[in-house]
Amino acid sequence: SPDYDDARAQLAALPVTGWGRQTDFSRYRLGEPWSDDVNVEFGHNGCNTRDDILRRDLDELVVRPGTCYAQTGVLRDPYSGATIPFVREPDTSDAVQIDHVVALSDAWQTGAQYWPAAERQWFANDPLNLLAVSGRLNEQKSDSDAASWLPPSKAYRCAYVARQVAVKARYRLWVTAAERDAVARVLKTGPAPNARAQ
Image (cartoon, rainbow, N blue to C red):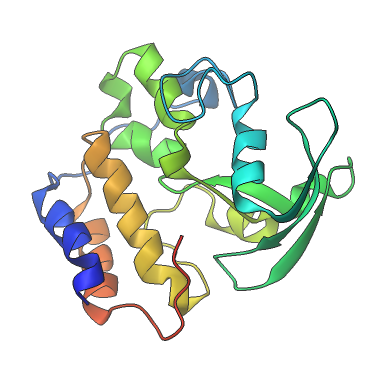
């Protein structure tokens, strides 16, 4: 599919090497979670990143008056194709979570450990690398790359790996050989019918 020619070209240009060390990875090394103090899209808008992504990705959105908070909405989950209601309450909010498409641990092991602190925080809050998704699938994915995990929805797999490649290209991250091969297989197969663009 010509729709993914750019992703194939970007993938071919990414450096290929092994995993870096993981032993010194911790979430705090990527800066304050959901910080607005970042020089990326939505940065410095007075709202935290999580709510920025919820407001971007939810349908039928209701925002709490006078705030940035997404109060209710409906997620058309790209990973499963399911429709998931979102209600901002302690017992229900986790049904919809924000996924780092390139997981933070993955990024740490493929180049982020060498960045200055500010760039790590920008990466962790860059909307290019963030999607509202099923909480269950976000937890299932954990810190996997494309060699270990792909969305259950085959219709979304091309868009998913293309986004991972775009993130890695923007931030000069590398890929492992297994990851490169897994992404290449998905892009070679092409999008399934009725694939939902994101």
